[in-house]
Length: 522
Image (cartoon, rainbow, N blue to C red; front, side, top):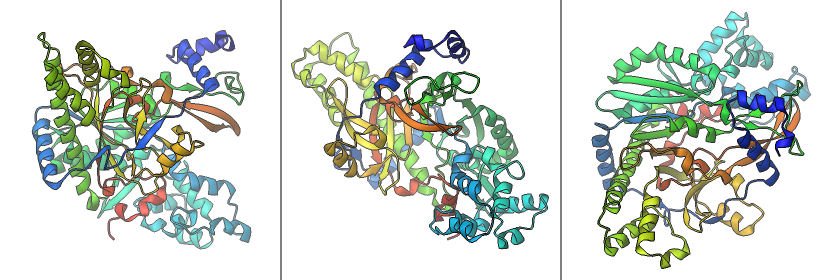
């Protein structure tokens, strides 16, 4: 495999901060592919997903409030995505629309809520519309005239390109999402608002970390400086905002259809971002007692936020409660005087029934010392509590029981693309799953002695993805690292908790902002 890479290739790899052996392993992965994830069953509220009673909600919220008074809480927001993905259907329309002839207007015959027609029909309802009107005026365009003349290309040029608002070049974090009277909030500002209600350390410190593309960091910093004072006064807190980028060293080589390195016109290797799994490096560098993870586009209008506030604290309380038990057990297991078999059996039951881990079959014949070693290994690892919502057909991953390499069975978040869809048993499990992963996580990355884990030790490298992409009209194969909340957290202790669907309000395309949960009024 090394012979494929020239001296110039190796120099390029080194300049990106990458390891040659890692790149060779990437090439081998393209050759071999990744094995499908062996599902055992879907996780459900009957088996694998916890439901929290009203009384328990109050207890967990209070537990979290007490904990956060003297522990550092950090909200981690993956925000590296470019806004251009939100406008994909508009870009596609813009590339073919050439005027008002009948065949061109046929492009608008789809009237569904995700359609281009629906966007233009409701353009006045978007929070960005007042500024869009200013941009039209700056270009000498009369909005009503170009709408009546169906000059939709002028509207899209004003919205998406450097001729106007340049939305296509902005991070999703800076797109105006919601309106509050005279105030318009971006997705970034909505995360500031949310965090002020559930991510407070002590009495008034609010730590938020955003990941970003390199070219977007300064834009986000500028936006924060513009609104910082008003938001800190409004919520009587002090924000501590930090940023990190997805490092080039986490990118993955692209290959052609024959699995040979894909090259640009100059003969240089072409690399692509390794997906959200690359952000494990960013997460690994944060100093926090408790991390709250939520995607940049999963926000809603204030009218719908109460469930979000409550359940973020519920998930946090669940983690704190389970962590207290784990730490207590670990301190007992490291005692020079070995615990009794009764204590070991008690901890073993906890691992099986609370952490939902089924030990390998040979565990029945293990000696006492082997059981202690196993329990320490299983308990002393990062913890995540993941909110799960009822599945209403959204694309993406879900909670499942999975058979691991050592024969044990544990809870995992699995993407549909990781499942052997040709296997009827596996397809049946997928089709009968009941819940969906909204990326709603609370995590602990420190051990029982207060030392931060090296998160790279808990990744399953066999859970990557291979997909097809297009570069300059040419089809290439791309590879994604094990997903941040998928294979990158495969060996974490995992708890699934059901949360209301009202806590999941993603904005994948711009039309999603026309849904009730993103509107100022019904």
